[in-house]
Amino acid sequence: MSVVTGLNETQIERLLKNRASFEVVGLRGNFMAGVKLVETKIEALGMKCRVKSDVKSAVAQGGALGAAFSVMSAPATLAVATLGIAAGLGHTLATYNPDYEILKDYVNQRLRVIYKK
Image (cartoon, rainbow, N blue to C red; front, top):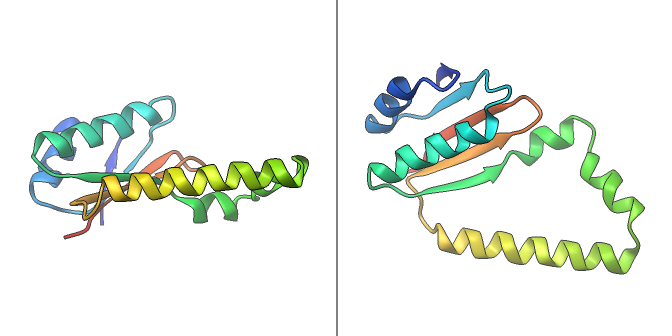
């Protein structure tokens, strides 16, 4: 898998045109701009993408989400979980059969851009 350091637009666009999977690293301070840039480039090429969080990476780094839910009461936790599931399902249906999947790794500040077709 190719690795792009920072927001190298030329390299990102070349990889997308070649329908390659790649990682974008070194995004400290530009993380959300990186997500938006890759998403915009994919859509400009007439392709669809799905943006997801890399949950496995976050869980491996200590499970902060579980700690947050344990502080909340059980009914509130259930309501938040239900809303999260509904939102995720809606997003999955809206981006059915994407060309690319963008996995956001907040912990390591990197993106994994995976060609799916």
